[in-house]
Length: 233
Image 1 (spheres, rainbow, N blue to C red):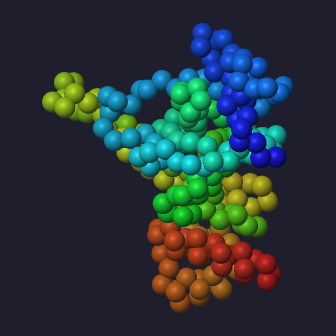
Image 2: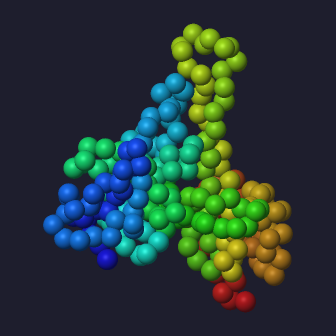
Image 3: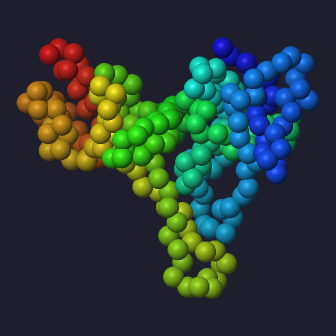
């Protein structure tokens, strides 16, 4: 169910643990437990670069665990803290959404295009981290990207520019089959090793099209072929 008008009323803003009263912003009763959060406090000004995906806010949509979808809202993905921000224009506040209530979110525009959808994996598997993953391909064998940002601290205790460090990003790829997520090493040999039943046909396809798994667009093509070959089997 799409409900743009009441999105602001479904947020709990924690200020000294005091919840936002939904009745103050809505003429009909709503269940505010569906979307909770706290006020965002800036932490990144003392570092170079940005902790976010992109340099600005994006128009997008949020889907909650319960299935509710809210469209055309201002979103910002904090990769460093693996957190989703929502800007509420009526409250004029940035809200850090409760990650456990978010199933997925989309950007109306993303660069590259494959980064449009981000899903929230909540898992007890100790070999895979819970959190937000870019969904590059959704199929029988799906492909995901996990972006991480870290801070490289300045060598000097008193840097001339006053910054304490600089953000840098690392990316990790995963594939999902039968609801299990597996980390993927981006070499031709390793990709073929993951799919021994179709390794011969897949190897021919990769060499014929001069594909390199380390190039994201090529990797997506490879996994599209993996799904085609798997379906034929």
